[in-house]
Image (cartoon, rainbow, N blue to C red; front, side):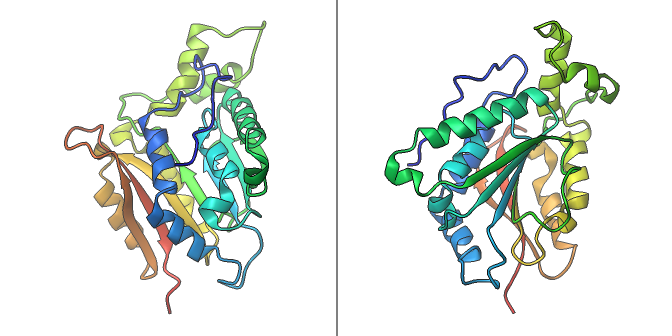
Length: 261
């Protein structure tokens, strides 16, 4: 079992704390099935070897998932020349992610250190707004999936997204935390925006996305939506929390284009 990165340095007053959804992503990405899939898809001799794979996590929070992938990229993808990048609308999460990734890589043994990826940065950005199209090889998204009546007010974000007078207020912390869980109608308002852009964001040949959903997000409908994009598109559940009822049941779906002739 691969070690989970430490987040002891993170203040969870304003940054999402790793929970069942975070650990489900870690378990899914490191299971034998997905390691085999990723290694085959990103083998250096496959698909014309279009350079080093670029992995993007949207909504990094504490950085535990991005740190895990960066620290163990050779184990997960079979190659160490992996570039990792994060994006989060919460500037405090961006700072936390950078420290989590760097700490995870520092704590590797000399043998393990030869297999970690190259961490680029964590962008303070909304979803994928700062990215060029077609450059993402692996996209990971743990969205704000909880159904809520209201969404965080974007007009407040600029003033809440910075540290003023050396501290934050309760209202500021509440706004920043809500960004990590409040999903609006059916918990899908943010995820729908990403899905609309996903086909153009992913590398057209080897791009793959892992998106976490809860039962009230209607995962089967989402998978059918992806398959309607064209004959080559695939969407399957590759990880599940195992719960048998209630909206809290979580699953990870993998979205990709088939490369079979």
